[in-house]
Image (cartoon, rainbow over all chains, first blue to last red; front, side, top):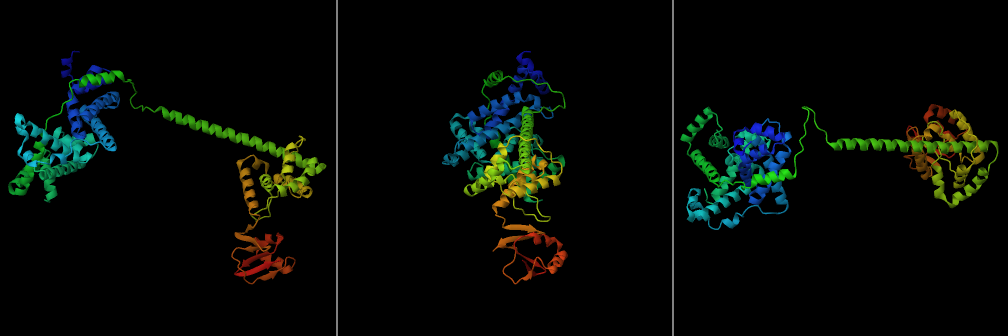
Length: 199
Length: 318
């Protein structure tokens, strides 16, 4: 099968073929979900290098454990679950090694007024690009400050636009817990961003 | 509606997770509540800010890297029958290890049994020989008695192999001792035809005859049931005998009472010098007294005076 012909094959069929050892089929799954997984992991671990390693591990692990995938959920839900677990492990290892994830927020608070006046809409303007990058880093720092569980729910909802139901499946927790964590995460971020005069 | 509930509903509204009815209700609420409108604006802004962040993409060579890693560690495809759960290998390993342990323990027990049986046979040979004629071992016994004074710790070791039948109801006992020399002699005796001892009474008679000849030094071994010797319980009994011997028999128990040997007499625990009523072992009244207090009757056989209490009165049996 040619590479572009894989586009028409459903996720379920790709999984079935992959389970039979078809590496090309699995490659198509990687192609479909690599950016989503990479972005999610990046927002959780906060470092590109870590995100890269974790995302690679996600797909390798998924391939080696494909036989345990029963097809009850969508393949991407399963991939997200693996990604979340590996990202958490990476965070735990990082904190055990005393590694500082991302840029320090304190170092960015020197001139919040410029940040407040800037908006992401102005990112297209070359003259504001540096400021926008700074704002991005600041937002990521605020995200990194959240406890792991709150950050994960927030990332899955806001960045990946998953439903509460899907998030509860991925995180293996009740729907009410998802709601409450999401509300907590938003409230904390709102307060923090207000303090930094970003809101 | 409480503020917390309002915020929760508001966030569900932002996420599009409200039912159509709740959505209408929330919109009506937003028209009235200015604070809620501000909250809505703030939370939407948080979403916009984060959603506006640049999407991070995996590097272009990502698929290639995944493929390379997968080719390096190919997956073993296992076809399983549905419903058949795979058991890890370590289960088998653990089961095998348990089996080996049990086997080893059984073999060890068997070796102990055979060792104890041999020892008991030798002991019987020795006693049978004593009954018929004085043996070199009997001569060695007297040497052994002397050597006890020189090597007390050896004496303790030899005491391990003795048990003595006790008077009924008396829980304590004094294991008779044997000398290292006799022990050695026991082990070195030539193999005589083994005498079969069928009944406990027969063993006892053998034991008593040995007592008269050897000052009770070898009676204990015959006092123990031979089946008992074949079991670890025999070892335990020997240990107990040894432990009690270590106490130099300062404590006896009888009918749930404890007697302590102090100032050459047995005193029931709790006695602290109170006045006592004297009882003589030979007096008729004493026999009558003990017929009324039968559980304590065995103290009549004790050699030393005994102080005991009945109905808050203390008695001294002389």
